[in-house]
Length: 226
Image (cartoon, rainbow, N blue to C red; front, side, top):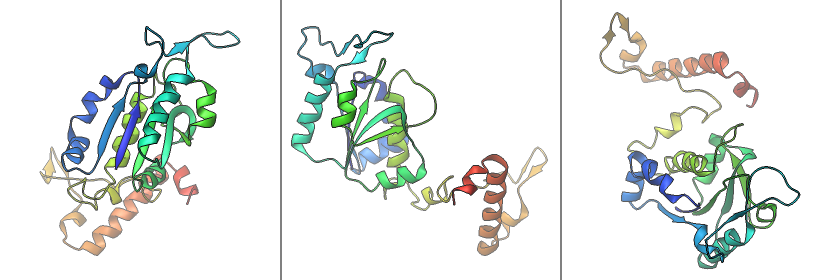
């Protein structure tokens, strides 16, 4: 998979993308991530990419031209399955969307900032808008990092055990069951005996029942989506 990220703050990705799962996926050659600062596509001598909104009001708006120039250049080199704008008013990101995006080959992610981007970019260049939650961030960089991490771990070969992602919360509209490891007795709190039984069928049954119970208690709305 190849991912191109358009941002005016590429340095914000240095921390999360240089460690753990994403780092290993890059080292294995399973993903390629490129960053594009669309300040470099501004014709303004000061590399300005924002201006005051028409009609007045607070905040600054990211200008259409630098973004469009960057997108045009990238699309001239390769085709994209999706051109995604990270926006608080986009569709709510969930595990099912991550599953679908994980089987694509080329993604472009646009990180907005300030008050947002010129609506003409959203109307004519963006194929999908995604929100990671009903709240507002200072920019789309953190949201893009969340999306990339969620999608990449689903690519075959990224995780050491490929079945691990299949048992994650939300894969079947259920939350994951409780998990335990050594020691068996921690300050008087012990591990459920069923997990030491060696009976794979009964353990799987117990885990499913625990998932149902946890979902009913914490996120009952997920069961209504089945």
